[in-house]
Image (cartoon, rainbow, N blue to C red; front, top):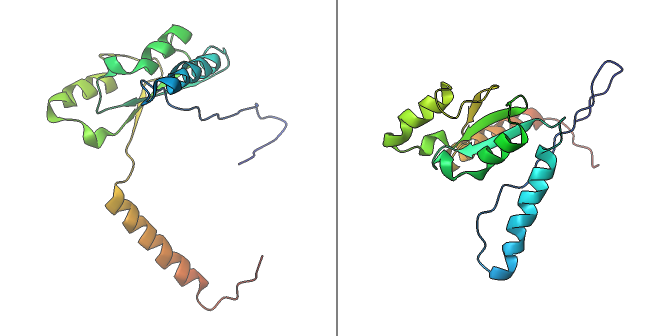
Length: 146
């Protein structure tokens, strides 16, 4: 997607790899530090908006991205939280997630968004629906080879 115009600011979206906590082989442990350094190098830039993705099914205390964001953006002006996997939260932890979303714990100035990816059955339904829509659209039309 490219949007340009004289009154528009420059914006680049960069999808960085997730932080790695361990590697199967000792010789691959170098990637743990390499990824962390790469992520930190972007987070420390003052014009970077930090989108801290945090898995809802794991304790936030065990997710390094939050502490890295806090160090790079102490005032929290550039950090947005994204809680993933809300459907995987155990019943006993629901109150903790609600507390985070209400800003009572691990508060972020810009707040949090919650996203849930579709499961396999939902993806199959979406794919079936798309195939039907495409078939219906293409019926009776000539398709040119590209």
